[in-house]
Length: 61
Image (cartoon, rainbow, N blue to C red; front, side, top):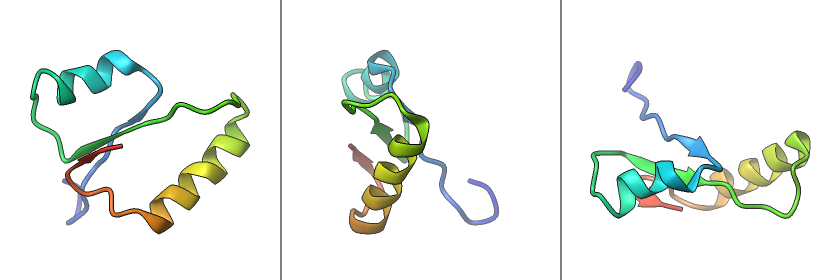
């Protein structure tokens, strides 16, 4: 945690998500990005929409 904020790993690596989800490694949550686009600007826009509409705390998304 940095200055009262939680850090949520954002990744497109399914192996990283497996460490947290299947193997039960400690985490505040993970955001696994799987989109039809590889365009970084579009992916960032999709991520902003997600973060503004979903409570990601303690979740595997």
